[in-house]
Amino acid sequence: MEINIIESTKNKLVIDLKGEGHALCNSLKKELWNDKDMNISGYHIEHPQVGVPRITIETKKGGKTPQKAVQEACKRLKKENSTFLDKFKKEVK
Image 1 (cartoon, helix red, strand yellow):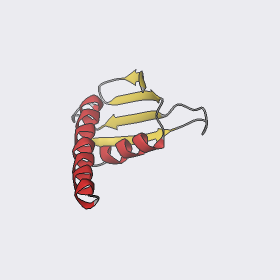
Image 2 (cartoon, rainbow, N blue to C red; image 1 turned 180 degrees about the vertical axis):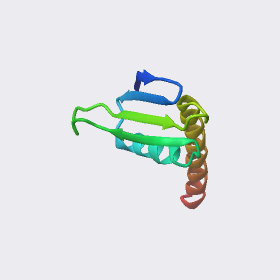
Image 3 (cartoon, rainbow, N blue to C red; image 1 turned 90 degrees about the vertical axis):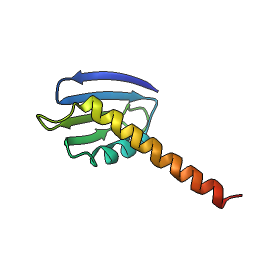
Image 4 (cartoon, rainbow, N blue to C red; image 1 turned 120 degrees about the vertical axis):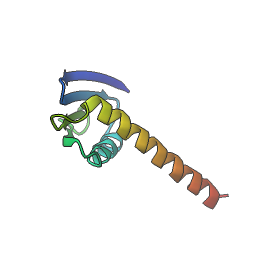
């Protein structure tokens, strides 16, 4: 995965995620919406076969930075995936 920052301001972050697809982008987008400080969380891929996902994150003024929101969302996703893996291992012995 290659991360390219396109725009970074106090309340807005736009990044390209070269080498990723819908799975990571959709999970991150949905998890970001669980944050009360979120104003915009979305992504698009220009071309379905060769396009690079571009994620746009904007937080409310006076709230946390979008960078902080992404870090927290990734931590929550990591915990959720770990929980799923533990439960899955117990079921598939």
